[in-house]
Length: 334
Ligand code: AQP
Image 1 (cartoon, rainbow, N blue to C red):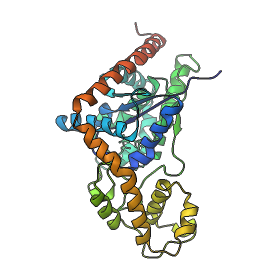
Image 2 (image 1 turned 180 degrees about the vertical axis):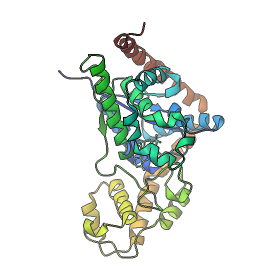
Image 3 (image 1 turned 90 degrees about the vertical axis):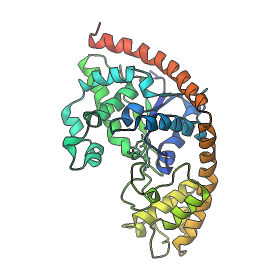
Image 4 (image 1 turned 45 degrees about the horizontal axis):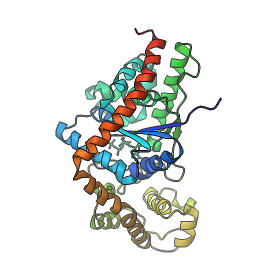
C-alpha cells in the first residue's frame, strides 16, 4: 500500500535565523516542496516555552515567515502558517501528553542542555516541548520531517508516541511513523567560536554565527575572527580529529561549493586557513546576502506577510480538523 507523502517541519520565531537553520533545515524545505505536499510552520507555541517579549515575538513570527519566502518557499506549493493559529496543535498535544511517558521525556538531552542545573525553574512547557512537536507532525499525518541533527532524538520520540497511540487505541498504521530527513553532508553547523557547540540563535556572542540578515561586512568580519587552526590545511580527514572549528569551516565550504570534503581537502591542502576563509567569505556573501536583502524587503510589507499566514492557516486548519475528528473518535471523546 503506498502512503501519501507529506513533509512537515517548524522553525521557532526566537530571533535571527542563521546559517545553521538554513543549511540544516530550510534548504531541505525548499527542495522537498517540489517532491511532496509540504507544510511549514512558524512554531510560536514552541517559542513561548522560554519567555518571549510579546511585541518582539510578533515581529519575529513575521520575520521567520519572510525567511521562508526569501529562501524560496512558494505559498502556492507549500502551506505556510503559524502554529498558534491552528488550535488543533494544542489539542492534540494534550492528548499526546497522556500517551507519552515521563521516562521518555526524562531522556531528552535538549531539555537537559537548555536548563542545565536550573531544572526546577524551567517551564513545564519546555519539558513537554517534544510532545507538542509530536502533535505538530502527527496532526497532519506527516511522513517526512526535514530537521537538523539536533532534532533527531525528538523525532524518535514522535515515532514512539505514534506507535504507542496506534497500539493503545488498536488502530494499526493510523499515525504513520514520521521519518527524519537529515542532511548527510552538514547535519549540524557548529558555532564559529566553539566547534563543539552548535550554531544557535540564543548563543550570546553574535560572532558565533552567520545570520541570514548579516551584511557583507559582518560576514567578512565574523569569518575572519572565526576559530580555525594554526597548522596548514591537511590533505586527509583524519588529521582534522580534535580540530572541530577547522572541520566546521571546511564542511561549510564544501556544502556551499557543492563539493565533497575530500575534494576540498585535496584542493586546499598545504594552504593556510586564511585562504579557506577568503573563499568561504566570498561564497557566503554570494549565497546569503541576497536572502538577507529579500528578508528586509519582505519585512517592509508586514500586511502581505500576515496575509500569507492567514491563507496558510485556513488550509492547515482544514487538514487538521479532518484528522482531529478521527483522533477524537479513536480516543472516545464526544
Ligand atoms: N546549528 C544547526 N545546524 C543544523 N541545523 C540546525 N537547526 C538549528 N540549528 C542548527 C535546525 O533548524 C531548524 C529550526 O530550528 P529552531 O529555530 O526551531 O530551533 P533550534 O534548533 O533550537 O535552533 P537554535 O538556533 O538553536 O535556536 P535556540 O537558540 O533558540 O534554541 C531545526 O530543524 C533545527 O534542527
